[in-house]
Image (tube, rainbow, N blue to C red; front, top):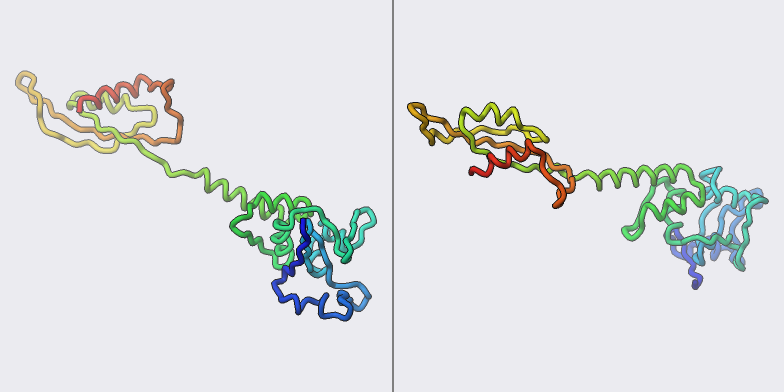
Length: 225
C-alpha cells in the first residue's frame, strides 16, 4: 500500500507542528516528552496528541503512549508507530477519542468500527457501538402489523353460532343489516353482513399450511357473498 500522509485534525499541512518546527521535529513539553504522536495505520499517517490517545487508560493506544515494555511497538523511518489495521475505520475511532462522539460516513458500518474499537480496547466506544447496532436491528425487525378482513353473510338465527365459533385470531369488527331476503313460512329472516379481521404476523402460509376447522367455517360462510 502506498504511504499517504493525512492530518486528521483538518488543518492545513503548513500549520502542522511537524513542519513548522525547526528540523521537522515534534514540539516537546516541559518534561522533554513530545505532546504530538505519529501513527502509521495500515500505511496511512495520522498525527494527534498524546492526551487524545490516553483518553482510555485501559486501551492499546494508552499503553502505546506509555511505552509499555510488554507491547511490541515498531516504528517506521519517520518515527511513527506502526499499526497493522484498517486506516479507514481508524479515523472514526480517533475522532471519538478527540470529542467523544461517534461520527460515521455513509460508506462505513458500525460493525467495522466495532472491530477496531475492540482491537484498541476502547471500552466506552465498544458499548456505544453495540447499543447503536442493537437499536438499528430493533428498528429493522419492527414491521407494521397487517390485517386481513372478511365479510360474512348470515341470517339472524346464525349470528350467535357464528360469533361463538370465531377463533384463530379472528375478531368481530362490524355488523351491517341488509334487510330481509328470505321468508320461511310466515316469518321473515333478517340478513346481515358481518365484518371480521385478523392480524398477520409474517407467518409463512405455503401450500402445506392448512387452515383450522373453525377457520374453514368462516371461509365457507364468507363464500356466500
